Image (cartoon, rainbow, N blue to C red):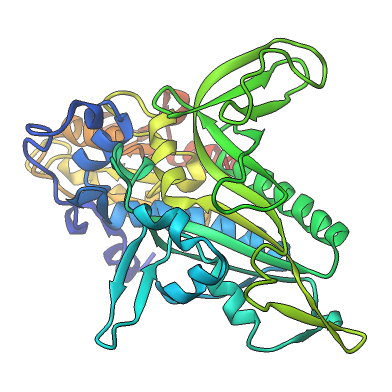
Length: 434
């Protein structure tokens, strides 16, 4: 291994990670009730900028980028093309779709120097129709599937719980265009399957519920939820056949499918799918050409709350004092902790290179806690709190004739003392995709 590779190893001392002091002194108690908010603020994953607005810091961005990579792969497999629409949408478009007045209290609006009004978009149905209406597509060009992952804005009456209910949030929004309602339904089913694949890779059980079309409208919709005590939604779930419905639609107590008893669960919505029909394409002139005639395209829209999922992973998996991540989404998969400077064991820090080489050969992203002015114990507490799935400690056992290293498997709450050869075998056999 070359020294250059060791120099390029990520180091804790180089991470921008502003840690707050007394952050909760003047906070509303409801904010503190969010475990994820407390942990993500306290350990420098996010930083509060103003009410409902947050900066995502380097460790948080690593998690977010891994999550986005999973979503991008599923969207590509679905045949969707990635785009980026402007943050501002003309208010005229929202007035054409008749959504402007029904949503006005939640909209952030701006007026330019020419007295034209724009909306900081919470969703992009109007904007995407405006885009595709610029040219009338031939029938053979459909289905069309376009998506983006970007910031959205909503003037929440009471932002709370960090990214679980924020004014600015990151969302994946997909818009689909088909020629018939039957084909649009087929697309809808494919997207729902894609969403299930995404949630399966994240590794947290979700619920798919019959949803409320709300102000977005359309023929039908489904909501995706994580069960959580802090959730403001309530879903009704049948343990016999898995029928699930949002209580806002119906307060039934008996399952309409199998007559089983429905259970109530607090939950947080993390995704929503809508079969829109021509609600937006007709008024906004999103047409295709069939037999030399213009026809409105049949639309669907599909959202995933990316930053909300990001926060809920912490909320659901973590302890009160330590963050936990699915292995494939952790900021770094492994953390190496060498001896303290000035200790009797300092000389065995030379094993850093060999350990890093083992991990690098297996494409395991690794960080070195090089703050050797602190004890191993203090750095171990920190690494556990950040939630690195695997922590490798170069301690006293590494001074033996056959050096042994402590491997802390955080997500499985076990530790091992292994030789370098055994460490290679260990990482060959663990499932790094969980």
